[in-house]
Each structure stands twice: as structure tokens, then as C-alpha cells.
Length: 94
Image 1 (cartoon, rainbow, N blue to C red):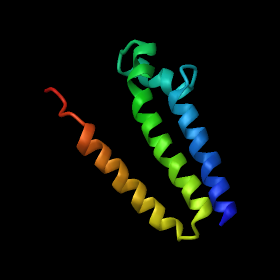
Image 2: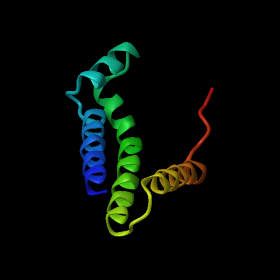
Image 3: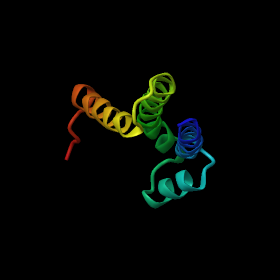
Image 4: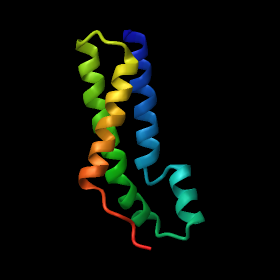
């Protein structure tokens, strides 16, 4: 159980860092592909990535103390993120 928890933390941290870093190759390429200002692209992506990272961090810490199957925490995480979108999300302007 500890192995899976540690591995998921390392992978989630690397994806979060890659997504939030202004010098990441994927961030630079996506801002170039969309013809968006590079720093503005990072600023718009940061809140979304940090919310997901915070939910993952909290659930990871809780899962370290509670011995429940990891699939339960994946489902709980998906529900929490869905509720956050429903409570704080806005419709996109067309």
C-alpha cells in the first residue's frame, strides 16, 4: 500500500510541476500552438492544476492513515472535483 501511495505522489507531483512550470516544454508548445501569451497561459492554467493538486494531496494524506482500497479514493476524488466544478464553475462564453 505504501509503495502505491509513494509512486502516485511522485507521478502526481511531476505532472503538476510540468503543468504549472512556465519553462516546461508542454506549456511553451501549447501557448505557441494557441497563439496565446505564454505567461497568461500559465496564469490561466495554474488555478485548475492547483485545485486538482490540493484534492490529490488531501486524499493521499487521508489514504495513508485509513486502510481502504485505493479505488475508493479515486472515486471520492472524482466526486470532489465534480462538486467543485458544479459549485464554482461557470459556463464558457461562446
